[in-house]
Image (tube, rainbow, N blue to C red; front, side, top):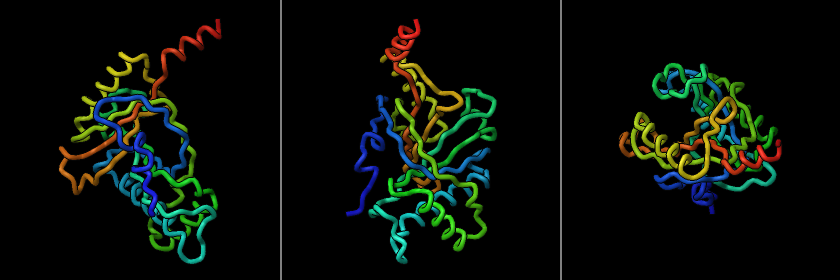
Length: 221
């Protein structure tokens, strides 16, 4: 059977529309950084093409006698994105041209530096116009977050974000979005082929438990 991360890890990929807490484990990603409006930026479109190109090159590495150690057949996980504004503003969704982003796709645990470099070589042969040097392989440990499934247009996300913030305030959490922990989205549809009101996007915000803050303060006292 083909392993499907979305089905096997329902807590990570199938949250309800009502916010909930989750402790996200460390995972391996192929990542590409960039700036600009994702709707109009060639840099963003190229990043997505690089990510999917490398992800499918890794998935198909079982062919040609180069199957990695520990390989298993799987469904390529969904596209994800970390988003922020370079000036530190928290109103990132109001001016898309000022977006900074890291686009990324999760990889199976067998993917190491050698597997990644082999995929870059293979993709460069097929699509030499893509700058695979933009991509990197990185372990991402997100930790404690509040998440919810947003259904609808990306422009309507502030309503879901407000619900996440309210959940934090009512359940003993505080937001930890900053330079290192960022607004996170996981995409389940191609917006070119799906009506905006039917788009499904997980919104995930990093947080800290107020109990942890209190314990840290007591320890430092």
